[in-house]
Image (cartoon, rainbow, N blue to C red):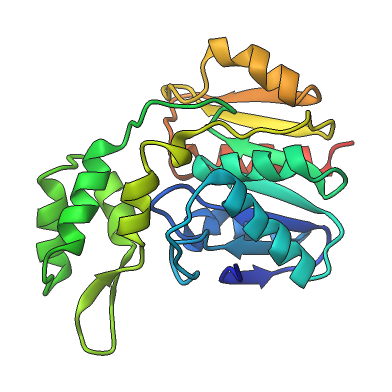
Length: 255
């Protein structure tokens, strides 16, 4: 699948991958931070943003999309940086493509299978997709019936766009996401251990990376380190952008 992407800067290539229900703009702050020293490629994962849609939506297929993008751009190797679902995609690429990933950064996700945790978000977006939305205020009200946190609602409503006919639509394939949400999208990435340098970033108050995950992280990513960002949750890149960006850039320039 030919993913939609943007790029800026020059230097070693870093591919940025957003989380579920996101788009390439979500890691925009990090992209701007890295652009003076790196060629930064930000992607819309399949069924998100302006990338193509498909009924097939699992971690291996999404990883193959990234490899295809690298091949199309004649990239022998790249740094992969992913948040949440994007982190799982990055891990899958690294575990199955020896020599293609020079460094790996995984933000607030572990290489394990999860019980679905975003039911309210899924319900909110499905309700939104089935409504003839006439304004962003109306959309916010619909989402607020399911999601209380204003920051999360603002994040979700970034997917709302007005088409040429003036109708508001979601740039998400909700049918495919809903179909695969409780199975393939929460599955664990699989493959042979990745020996390259890896950085796992955890939000202190987030439960996505737990102490019981350390054994599997070390088994699959033996050359990894874990850094905890205090007073941050799952959206650590948005809650503590300066610390997040600094830690990532320091890791990328280190030996």
